[in-house]
Length: 425
Image: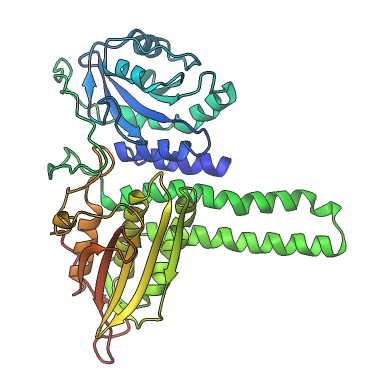
């Protein structure tokens, strides 16, 4: 549990709306809920603003939505700073949250988010069943969400006495709709955004071997003979597993100057799959590696690592809350190494396949992504002399295909060579 909380606190320190959503997503695995939102108070105009929602916008409540005045519940929470557990909830007006009443939520947990000496905002967790939250869950949720407070209030650098007008309520679009290419006001560095996604999954992935190690260590003195030997072997195996998880995460997070060298793409793929495996499994998504021992390519390892991770996250999002399979295949096509990521989701309409690599273009609902993941992938692959495209998957769903030139004898040195950072087209 401590490892989970530490990891979630690390996400919160990213200080952006994506970190807030990632924290809600991770919290859902220990304190399950049906819908949640993070809201900040707006001192300049006495109103409030939605920072993040999970799993998707509802009743028009989406990131960026502003309203004023506060409801009686919001004003009381702001003034008292006390958490509230409401097991037979009534959504009162004014404000857009009253629209949630029509979705059948019966239990509500409100967690105040503090910054310095004031209440910066709050997190709201909802369940459809009445009397569904326990006080213990409230305590755990508060401990996890507490670090979000400074991050929630930090973006509110508005000039005193210059209130911003409330924005019109965004329309909650269906998952199949397409958002335009309008850029958000402030962008999160892509690597930080994807790192936040990783930390949530790694927290749970680490919890499994650490639980086994702790459990066997506590009973080791009472064991003898074969049972003691088996316990020691288990501790060693699980410690190696935990070490590998941490090493992979550190490898990804380490900032390295771009450089080209001979790399094994299948080794990079295995490492990325290991980092993401737990996050996929909890969504009932099976990962199927189908590698054919392709030759090395001349590439920057950290950039390929980031591109592959974006593709795994993209496939996971396509299967969110439905489960399915993600197949990662490597093959040789003449002088090119081909890497394909195929999911068993709903696929990409043919008329949109040519646009998925455009920056800020996304087929997901508002608030579920910046539309930058595939644009980053395209930039990385193009910088390496390769190409990327989207097509229908072999068994339905979508497939993203990458091609990278094979490293031939004499095509380049084995050591590092300067590499120009990829351009996002």
